[in-house]
Length: 507
Image 1 (spheres, rainbow, N blue to C red):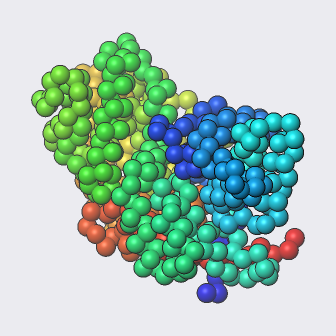
Image 2: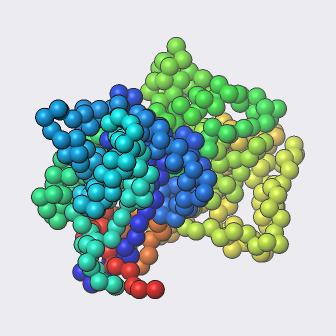
Image 3: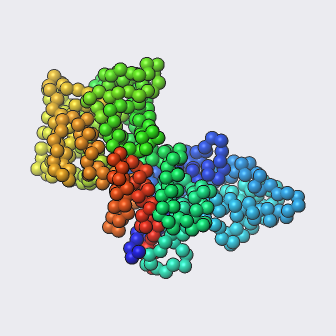
């Protein structure tokens, strides 16, 4: 290969950190050690980006977490540090350190690293018992930068500005984190040690094996949630005077519906993006069935499969999504149009000029929302963006700011006609359901979803060299008519660009 993306190191996200802890300790109930960590920011909508920093506050929180992990770990790993009377303690300690450090740091540890941890063991043992020494060693390992950061550097002896293959354990780590957000398991590590991950077919086999695990489903759920911008739903609030249906119970029901539907798509429909966008059913309780004007299949309040009326299709017409992309007291054609453009069509919407008034028009009782926003954005300075954005957002006007279907607003007929510009031309539509059906078959969406998944998995924006890997992802994604997320991931890990990096040039 002549080209590759740059070598780098990446800080673990909170989810990846917890998964690393649980991979070592294997508790009956997974531990969440990062609950107190500072929230992660997002870039391009994703929290997995490679610009995550370690602030002084986070460093303190990591130190506390390492102490807590060590307290649990000394008991969970007792069988590994307990030494038979017939074996010298330092020999047992070295075996314990090498085993724990190799699993935790996701690579074979060097002899000098083991020696440093062994010195720590000996110092602690001068005045304490082996359990305390084990606790200090575990704490030191989880405080290590080698645990907190993943490397994509290749062999240490590689020269500057050279295209190199990642080390076998870096490939195993990259593959496992891409699919599960967790360290490589024993089978994947064995494939790395034997050199089998040099084969694209073996990488595909391992990826497909991991895609069947609950960890992969949780990871892909996080992708869908961040891709569609649904992570802030817990703080959603609405004006009860405008939307009397809104309540804490309604918010819980609407969010539970979307969560259950996404999980169904991932576990039962192989991550089909087309069904995500175009399903004629959902999973909801009786409250949502009443809100959707359809009959509940589970009248006792539990979630059940629910047929959607013809005015709804897929996740874009879920109440939780429509309410997310709306205002406190009205719908928002701008937010909904921007959502489709940015998240589903991968088109950047530039920020408005600083001289533009960003305050949305006040609700009035003698106009529709469409009329108010059309007048508000009828500004020559705004026309460039709103010419593309508004026709999409106006097509959502058959749903109010809570996601209730409507044909009349303020006594006036609702106009939900719109259009969307796609590569094959501008397509007219009426209503969000018809738009969802258009998007579910659009090549523009077929190109965008692998790009969004690339950004999430690789933790960065794409650069020119990434077009090769993206082509591999898109080809695999479109090979199946259902457009399955797992296939796009397989296309990525099979690509030679997934396992090669260009080493950094000297400063």
